Image 1 (cartoon, rainbow, N blue to C red):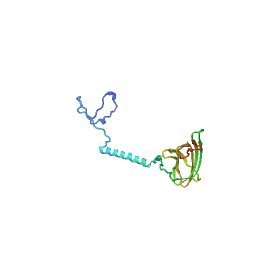
Image 2: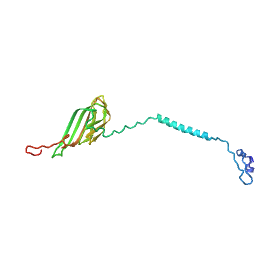
Image 3: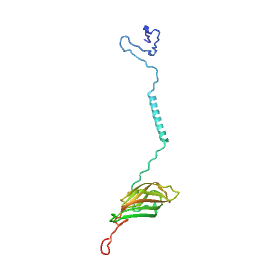
Image 4: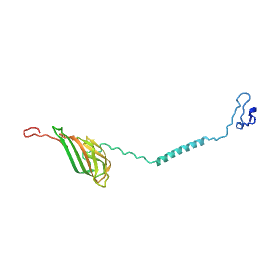
Amino acid sequence: MATSAHTNPAYDGVDIETSKYEDTSIATDGSCDNLSFKSAPGCELSVVATTLLGVVCVALIVAIGLIVGLTAPACPLPPPAPTFPPWTDTRLPENLLPIHYDVELQPFLPPAGDFELKGSVRIRFRVAKATSIIILSCDQIKLDKSSIEVKALSADVAQPTYVDAKVDADNMYCFIIVEGELQADKEYSVFMKFQGVINDGLHGFYRTKYLGVNGSVE
């Protein structure tokens, strides 16, 4: 059967379109052996076309990623952390040339004290080679980091910013770190306060003993 229309009187005057079921046949013997359908018209893609479409999509995604990656501003990398200690030679480096020292020492001797001392120092120096680290000799002293000041003594030089100070007790050095670099051929000064001991090891600000006139130890 090609087409059919319902003949119930309740549907008189109503046209029911059944053309989309063309070539549909149903057996009247109660079996479905002869039931068949015909595909409705539509768009179909071959396997090759589907594969090509997928490749094009992937290529577009990769191209967009490359464009974004190449045109986006590069994030600056953080500077490498300085190794510590930055100097272990037995002699100070020659990048800073001292010009003048102003030193103040306040000893605390018995019975008022136990050979402690407090002090401060201001060092004027010239930079022979640009650097961001001021290296000083120190032994058995405790730096007051909050008191440290680094100043440029030339009007045409920007004032440096003190960052931190570290002590290398093994090699008897202290390192004063500034932001940026101290410029070559320019004069600067560094100031700091400290505490320490008056040692009996014959180095630095030390104490010693001697025999008095009557043979007593002084």
